[in-house]
Amino acid sequence: MRSKALGIISCLFLLCAGPACAQAPDTVYLEELTWTELRALIASQSTTIIVPVGGTEQNGPHMALGKHNVRVKALSEKIARALGHTLVAPVIAYVPEGQLSPATEHMRFPGTITVPDESFQKVIEYAARSFKLHGFKDIVYLGDHGGTQAAQKAVAGRLNREWAKTPFRVHAIEEYYRAADAEFPRLLKGRGYREDEVGNHAGLADTALMLAVDPRLVRADRLRPGAGQREASGVSGDPSRASAELGQPGVELIVTRTVDAIRKSMARR
Image (cartoon, rainbow, N blue to C red):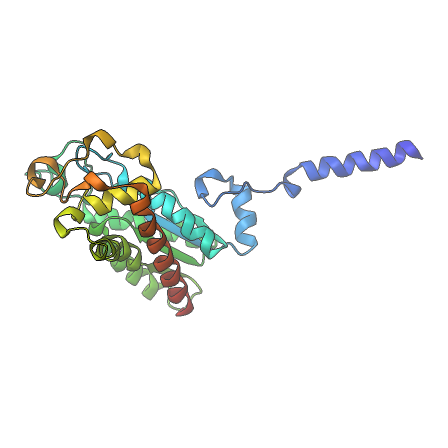
């Protein structure tokens, strides 16, 4: 009798050690899941996915080329966890950055990668089509790069018209970029930092955000003013006084504004 009971217990243990009882790891990142773990999450109503759009471009002598990619991935995780039942797709790292011949904008600096706008639009369109096929009902574009905002909005509009009679929607959330590009710099100016210090590319605001998200990408010994020297250094502003403490309110602002905007957009479906 005892051996029979032990046999039953052993069988139950083996069953629960298998895929049926396996739990997905504590991650919101799609690329860290197996397909069976993802299928189970979708079945349990995790049907919102963020598509983070970054970009690989110069950020002055003091900040790494992957700024947009690292930042949007980290902030997307915070946003996904705040929303709940939300996952994060792999970062789209190749975006329009200017012309090749003659080289324009950031393409004048080594390491910047560009793609045609139509190619970029196809990538994010087919990412959304893929996620729809697998059961994600709300697909959210978050762009850390100013140059991708119009394309994200255009693709979302086309897909939403096509999917109008279905439960699937694409959300191009401009508030994410607006919080980083306009609201956070305005907050810094309100605290007494000069406009030419705050800057609009790799300056005080941009560098402080990166220090708050991942300081490994900032070379602290190379923080130099870039005012009037953007053509040579790629910097607009002065990152000298940037710190993680200065950037943290910006992180919180971006997350709060974006979560609110996503919820409002989803409520309009």
